[in-house]
Image 1: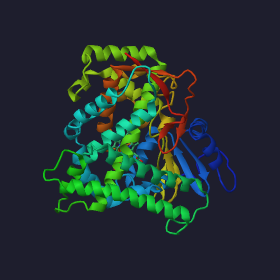
Image 2: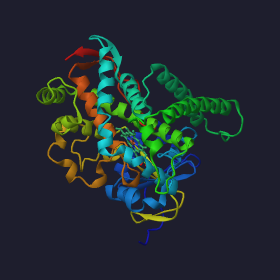
Image 3: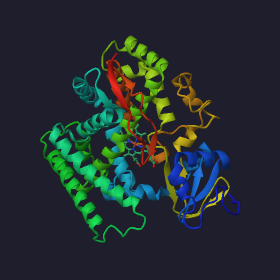
Image 4: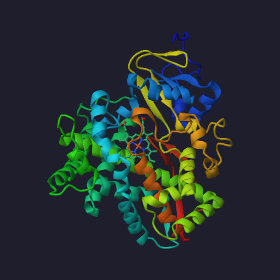
Length: 445
Ligand code: HEM
């Protein structure tokens, strides 16, 4: 298709930084304003980088599906390679495709369903330690729970000591990596500055812990049901299997991509329910009728349409992944404009999920909007919490099942009363975090 000359419209920026400062100070508001003011395709600059924002579902489909083979992950996603290595989130091309094919069977629906009992059991263990009147931070509590579930389902890890060693070494490596991001002019990773040496040591410690888990997994006489056992035995058409290094990259990736996103889904859902007692009452009624106090099994889930609508709506209002991006590997056309090789195209769930054309009164939390088949009527990329195309989230079934099981298991026993003075705000990092946590008090249902 012939392209128009020049760039799509967009906000003016400064000579050196472009629009970085506007983005850094307002992030979500910046994307939303740009999309509302400049329409389906806009353009701006992050320092020397030319960036497009695709806000139209058809254009998003073109990037994620039609032209997917001419795009790679954007610069931000690549920055996590020191920890994620060449795992599914960060790898590209033929290597990514091979790894995806090897991993996919472990995420088929019937395999994923087998993790339901673990999810239920670890939730019960958490509840056993809770007391009415106790103060908790919702985000912290559910991150701990989804982390325990991830470590059990990924590595078959039960030992709290192992769990702690893993999360401690991981936290340190991530803190040091985030520190690196904050420094504007940094020397490459291989230059032995004190900061780089600290990061290198922290990553080495983390990898030693994970390699230990992998060695244990390989040495098991009977392969278990955990994802590691499944990936260890996964074979290519030519009979080759993943190396220890590949296993480590994939396991780190699955842990990091999977547990915090699910914890956030739960955290934002609890916040919205605490703020919307009428929705919470309907939910409790559904659980009473269908479950009568039981932890749901996968067979119950199709009978919990309101639970599903609540989770779907919470991920619309607070999408845990609010931004994805791709970099063009050659000159392409998009929306009548030329995307030159090296340009980045961003797509923001925060923006699309707030489009009043598809979601009237978009700021309102209304699970009912999903009850009459809205999902089927929407254009494909009007709602895409799990991304789309060939790189769609591999763990979406896992995440939705986990969220529904935990929500119902916890919600039948307890409700959360938000602290009256709590300040709730978003902190958009790689995922959409609550800036000051979500402080609440437990009350028996
Ligand atoms: C509610 C929870 C979750 C949300 C919102 C979410 C969201 C996403 C999104 C938007 C992407 C696409 C990123 C892009 O296109 O650049 C993605 C990819 C991915 N997710 Fe999830 N995710 C969730 C849970 C999980 C879980 C539980 C796992 C694993 C157990 C997982 C593993 C992955 C992996 C491996 C990829 C990369 C896939 C590839 O490129 O082939 N995610 N996720």
